[in-house]
Amino acid sequence: MVLVFLALLAAAQYLALFFFYSAVPTILRQAGAPLEMLGFFGLAYAAFSLSFLWAPFVDRFHLPGLGRRRTWLVGMQLAALVCVGLAAGLDPARDLLALLAIAILASLAAATQRIATLGYAVETLRPRDRAWGSTAIGWGGALGLLVGGSAMLVAVERGGWSLACGLLAGLLALVVLLLPLLPEPQPKPPSAARRPSLAVLLRRPEIRRGLAVALPLAFAKGIAFTLLQPRLVDLGIGLSEIALVVGLANAAGFTLVGPAVSALLPRISLARGFDLMTLCSTAALVLIAVPELAGLVSVPIGVAAALLLFAAFTVMQVVVSTVFMTLSDAGQAGTDLTTLLSLFALGAIPGMVAAGFIAGTFGYGAGFATAAASCLGAFLIARAAPLTRDAGSSKETAERRTTSVKPT
Image 1 (cartoon, rainbow, N blue to C red):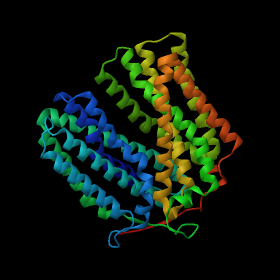
Image 2: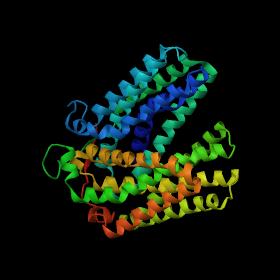
Image 3: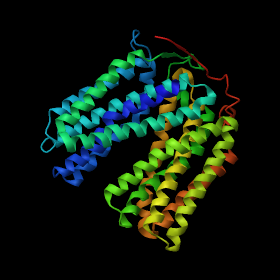
Image 4: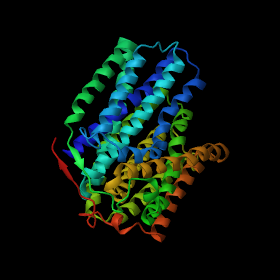
């Protein structure tokens, strides 16, 4: 049941975000908004990379009547509802700046809600279920994109802006009413008996080792995902077809690949799973780079590369998220897991920047080859500086951070 809760919580936190981040820019462009202005809607996602800055606050403070996690889940979902309600009264063709401001507010609410969701995951999942939890959160995010982004775009096209905002507001209101029924986890106190803080997290040597092996993967992910869609465009594939390919590849990854990885990880050590993941990512990127370097490019090969890339990075996300969950202290679970995932996201930014320079100078093949080399580097670092024992085996963590969940 916890996995169902996590999937629904992940979907709920992304409903308004993907409406403003994905659907609204498309609507605005159709209304004649300049591309340069639409690029600023990417700021709606920036809060997720910076949310570690206020994560300790979310871990420390709550309303006694609602509980540590439900306080922020309900509060931020209500904030998202207010944002959509405000947007409903605007005209997308004229109120561009107002919509951008609301989008940023919705992003802050979603990022804060994610802190509570991640804390809930660490506090409720048994060690052997952490990989399944990572998959559930990823699948919930895909569902949030499908409903908040794609479905609302269809609603605007068929019924107009006001109808789409009304439908989304109704869905968000339903979530607000249901969230108080969520069982509230009862975490153990921090292992160091201190208030939740970033300093407590970053002083732990196993955290620094975990980041050392994960950041090269983030760099590779930044390169590969930055190059993927431009490559499909250069192959002559239309924008709607690219959206379909990317959407299906993402959904297939968390529906098919994610569960397979989740079933495997409890049966092997997490350190071994990490090694296998880095090697699989390296192999996938090599397979994508070789045809590019050899000049064997075509639409079918490009589509196959997209499917392979999403499959490989689904494995990466499940394994990396599971490692980060294992490293998180239950007493400041929201702070720890949010910070680790935020730093991983920030680690992708240099890859995004480098991707354009590498591909522009040496071609797409060199870009994907660089990403493959970065994944191989993560493997070599992990061999030289092994993950902490707590992250080394999912069996060894069976009693480390277990918590109870009391009914409401």
